Length: 243
Image (cartoon, rainbow, N blue to C red; front, side, top):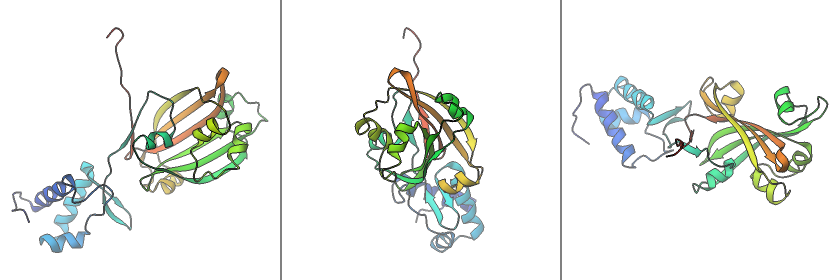
């Protein structure tokens, strides 16, 4: 055990745990020892251990899951805003196998915003496909996609717990995805999203709204995705004209 170099002792425990994480003794996703285990191992009080764990969580090294324990944070997944790609394609590019959990796939009357984006009349319906997107066993986002009927009806017949939608649309349904308009904003998790993403209510979210076009600029998909901001981030490279 390292020689104490800090007073108060919670600083010393913080350094030990920080070094253990940095050197891979505790890897991303691993559970840390419980507070009682840390108290026994280092002969420290409960107040000292709790302060050290709290500070490491505030620094972003670890996070807590109610009733499950304290875990080492994974590095955020990042997506570069340069190409039209799906969640599955982004994960596969990082050698991560994407997973999905279907919430619903149903015919529905879309809200006004979606109807306008897809150029629909008030009586036209669409297919709503809502799935939880998962990477390395962690829920990353909830995606609510509204698809025009001719595409959505065929997607709804498939096993949506397994398939990446863009791949099926292009290779099986022979519908090219050409361009998309996209906006990114911030929000906080309501009770429904918090439950689906295993986060606290009011936790910060990244919200991505995407309108995707096939040939002749015909819109076929309007999807709103709610990303955990502790697990996902966007990056973009900017250049000044003439440089």
